[in-house]
Length: 250
Image (cartoon, rainbow, N blue to C red):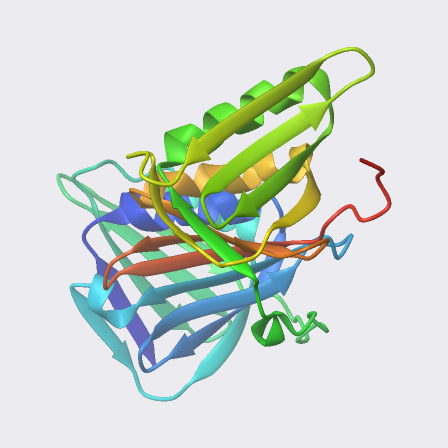
């Protein structure tokens, strides 16, 4: 048995909306401490690690851990039908997930469960990052938008005192720099200089996770995967791992 009621439906909608940019179906784990999903996109360029904690729900009941396959696009379509005043109650019924949106009216949706097997996901929990930077999401969004004007990838650089993003085209370039102490650079850790390049099309999709958090934490290394992490305290963690473009020359 699984039954959970969520008051702030927007928190889940915004998270699933970001995930749907990368993944169209996935195996959700219903556990004692919350609902989680770990899945890679079909190109194995990105991995999503998502968890909504049981403490985010007004009511949360699960008698045993279970994994259910869902079409993420269909799930998002239902969640988008919720208004800011609605409560959402999710109930597992045999081979279906029932979602009831209730406020002035009671609306009921039923989604079929998919027969999905746990796919092989790169061991992202074993990654060790050389540096991390915590930023205001608007700053990262601006850096991505600036870079997109001149190129299809962006170089992230860090030193003990500075964070920067740089993109270069055939004749144009764009650069964003933040020195330690800048209020938009909330935290910068690491005592080495590193740089690594990442595809902008993926970054544009991932930054949409900013809707659930006031900051974004970036973790990366020299020609190494990047982890983007958005957190809403005691409610949701949405992390995404992005593979680097190591073949590009500087």
